[in-house]
Amino acid sequence: MTTPAKVALPLLALLSLCSAAGCGSGAKPAAAPPPPPVIVGQAVRRTIPISLRAIGNVESTALVAVRSRVVGQILMVHIKDGADVVKGQTLFTIDPEPFRIALDRAEAQLARDKALLQKADADLARFAKLVDKEYVTREQYESAASQAASQAATIRSDEATARDARLSLSYCTITSPIAGRAGSVNLRAGNLVKANDDPPLVTILKVRPVYVTFSVPEKYLADVRKHAAEGELTVRAVSRGDAGEGHAGVLTFIDNEVAAATGTIRLRGEFPNDDQGLWPGEFVEVALEIAEQKDAVMVPSPAIQVGQQGSYVYVVGADGIAQPRPIVVDRTLGGETVIASGLSGGETVVTDGQLRIVPGAKVTVQTKP
View 1 (cartoon, rainbow, N blue to C red):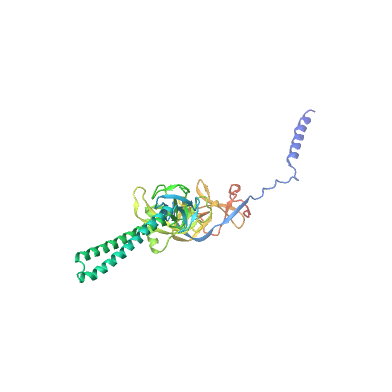
View 2: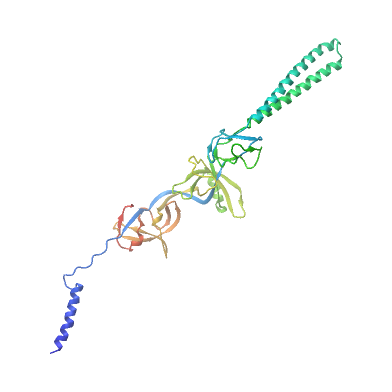
């Protein structure tokens, strides 16, 4: 009689477990998770430049170290450190009084000697009449002629002295020989300045236009020369941290020799720099556009993924299913990547949310926030 009781207890436990687990015919299956959300972009075909990329250095097209040409005391400084200046703008004024005195002295000496010359000319004219009548000797006449000629030479010397004094006086006003940006002013009002002294009073850099100098491997020299002979080559310079397209210029210089130590050729582009976005001395990313590539396939760079088998992208089909597609990357241009093979253009590729994708499963396409 004990056997049925022993069988009934396990059966009851089994029924309880089955009820708790939903083994009955009325149990509902667990709901499938929703497709993961992703952001997508398009693979497009377009004509793009073929560029040589390098790091370049911005240089001023003109540099002037402003120095005094006379000795004197600085009366006034007309600019501030780092100021923009125009050609002919007054920068410094040196005390002109000593030079005015020197000019007055030179002009007074010139006036005195001119009066003496008039007397010498009058004497010569008088002796010229008398010598024919033999009222004076030939020797006296020649002495008067010599005196007049000597006085004329003195006048020329006096005129040169006056011009020199006038020129020195003009040097008391120091103006900018070029338009550009001033550096630090090294001497202030009240200081005594010497002619051609170091350091200069101020250094002025011309910043419109500017040069960008860079180097490329010598293996590209033939291509650069070929395309430069066909027309102007565009150079683009992007300051570090600048997310824009940068500044456009033209190639204006190819060095006359290859640097033997580095195997590179030095090039230089000229940029208008109207917005003064390029700063002399800074390093920039340079792209020299030597040709064009037509119908290049491009995708947003965030779409590129790298796995054990190489680079790939997730392509979303019309049915919303994402599949990995192996690709070969050519190069990167800004925020886009040129695809050498693997895509033909027109595909929809995932640019964000790749970690949530299960290959061959559906995804939910969202707009970029």
